[in-house]
Length: 104
Image (cartoon, rainbow, N blue to C red; front, side):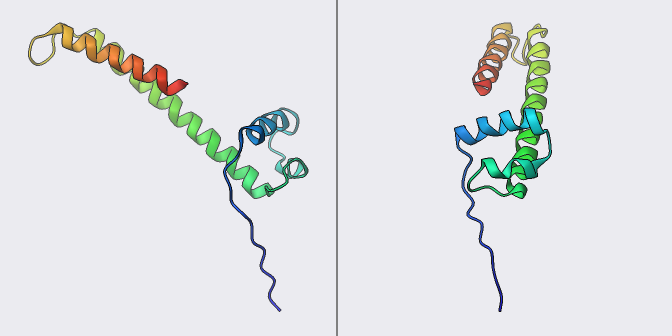
């Protein structure tokens, strides 16, 4: 007799994410203590969520840092390849605007 457990995978709701943050403040990475607070999540899913959220946050921070370096570089350029400083300034301003909206 084979018994197969099926786990339903679904996206984390905003409430679940907020609950995770509150539990993280109390239990840190002891994910087994999180399970009773989530009806449809296993400890493995919670741990995976933590890893993915942390990884994605680090990637966004790295991307933002690179963008800031590029913006700084562009603002310090006197001319672009066609000799128009305004074009370079507009590129830098556009990157700042895009970076701002990515944080929202």
